[in-house]
Length: 282
Image 1: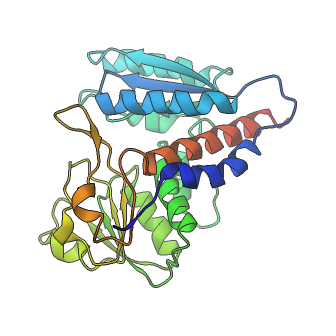
Image 2: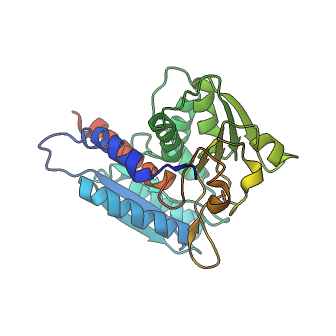
Image 3: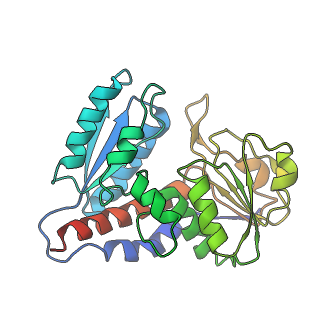
């Protein structure tokens, strides 16, 4: 059996850096607004995880839950109130949102200092501009923390990224390219996914498709990072990778739950502290 990369082990090492970001002797607690539309099971699970892990660190979490049927204009007005509230230091919008809700307004108006998951235009643009510093999507950064923890030399390494979404795949691909990796990107139009994934020394999967990756999709001895968080028919959290099928072939693999998601939560905490520092430094 390959080494199981436990998110809590990565997080424990990262936690020292996270807590050091909190200003000393400050009576005001950093406040994170968690915005959710509807009751998608994976969103609720992530929201509970965020609150459970961030509250003990001294972060106040306030949930704003809207009915799935809310009209876009009404949601945008409510979002503006949250965005403009000086007592809210950070905003986390849970996705996916209902299809009738366009996020154009949110993307264009979210305060970049509060945009701790980098969904807005300003932070997203900074990812693609050399020398510009802003927030990076939490999950994308969490994957880099895991690879760093595993001491994987990315320069010259063959990495296959399955999934090219705006939140994870695209920014993570850029980060991997900047590290010197040779990156292959696969999407829903890839004709022979198995061939592409089985070449990878590092395989990263972020598609939202339950157990898309089976044992024969994986190169012997590869490192497998499963970013997917899905709910199966029995209500269990499962990944995009069939963990039981792949674990003996991979040299190391992240489980779901207990893998990338755990690290992502502490990356989020780090961003909340940094957001708070930037807004209160004067």
